Image (cartoon, rainbow, N blue to C red; front, side, top):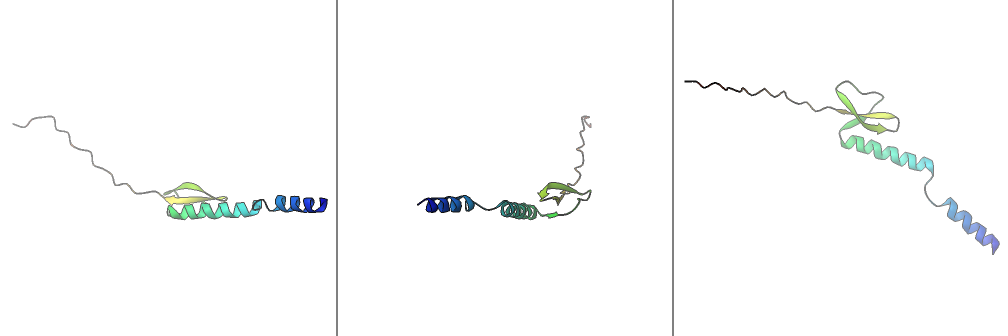
Amino acid sequence: MKILCIFLTFVFTVSCGPSVSQKKTKEDGEKKRECYLVRGACKTSCNTWEYIYNYCSTEPCCVIREYQKPVPKPLNSTRHIL
C-alpha cells in the first residue's frame, strides 16, 4: 500500500504540467505570432522608420510606422473683403 501511495505521489508531481522549456517555447511562438499579426518582423535590430512593438524571445518585433500625410494649415481670414 505504501508503494502505491509513493508511486501515485510521484506520478502526480511529475505530470502536473509542462516543463519550463515547453512553456518557454510556447510563449516564444505566441509572441512571434502576435508580431506577425501586427505585420511586424522579429529582427536583431529595428530601422529608424520602425518601432519596437514587443520582443520575440530576445529579438525585438519591428513594425513599420504608418505614414501620416502632412495636413495643410487652414487659412483663417479674419478680414472682410468689401
